[in-house]
Length: 450
Image 1 (cartoon, rainbow, N blue to C red):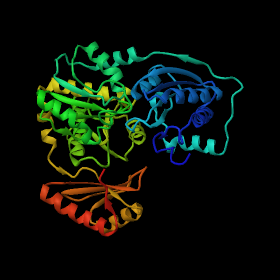
Image 2: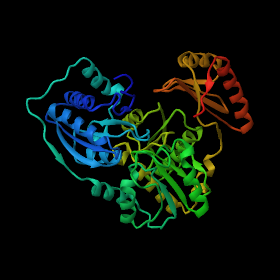
Image 3: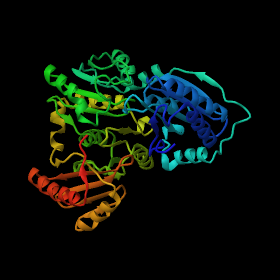
Image 4: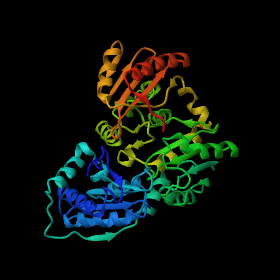
């Protein structure tokens, strides 16, 4: 089972580690943890092996006494919607999101779309399997089907206040966004340029991973050539998204977080807004300017959701393209994010590039990855080397100086050290980067090009 239990989900190559046998045991272990007699909703993406994995997983859940309701093909946010709207005790999505086609996995939630990560449940599932502490229930749970697609689309459509016909493009990357987007647009009377809406998890055009900006090239080209208002790209299970503005520039997720946070605070009054440690300083400045409470959080959707729920904030945003909404049980939805942006564009009657221009006051490096097997040691060294700054250690190390800051974090899954720097000017950024990269290189770290 080595390496299959990740920080936020279960994920691995199908048939190698992630087999039907293991899926059944995972289902039984999860049922033992949640409890017999409880109800769980299960959805899946369109990978061919999602069907046998779903069958094996649900067998294990039922052997553990849980009643299973299968909703078939769906996006991950649709399982969240089903879970918190219809009172399920848990929800599970069979997906490997943006990973290549040979991968698969499971995303787990308790009631109300509360995620189950390694720190709060997946560790226990893994422990039960390794110790063979798996108990079959005297009563096998039931298995039935339900369809929540119509309900989810209606929930989303209600939130699109704007009636303006936008000119825009949607790139689903052949992922699960394509299962909903056509029906949604028809429901709300909108049309969009379709990029890769067919479900095909061999990803024939590009991986459905908009965090890798190389996957956005077709979307950028479409927006520029057709003079569109914006473009939006979804990841494989449609919980994350990235935008391209009307000039064809990719909108960094922390800049979009700032725009949406400002809108919520203006309309609904002061609240907490959660953002991650890699985010621009402008996020905090704008939140504070509207009387909001900026909450800096460690990276990862399970941490972000828990923090937003604890503070009862309206909204949160993460650099990977996750955007979280209190009205969505503190969970993330790419479609709800798109709707929110459309409403803002209509109400403010400005282009997306005009709206975000005031937030682009600093110069970011983007994420630079270094291959190293001594990440912890380097993070400790950095704290001493840059001791004059204000250090934050909730997730790796972030050090803020008067006019620049940097963040060093260890990857959860690879032998990588991730660096993000932001400065007031390009010259200052170049100078700081030269210093930090020079030091890391001398310590044996190698820039990772992928």
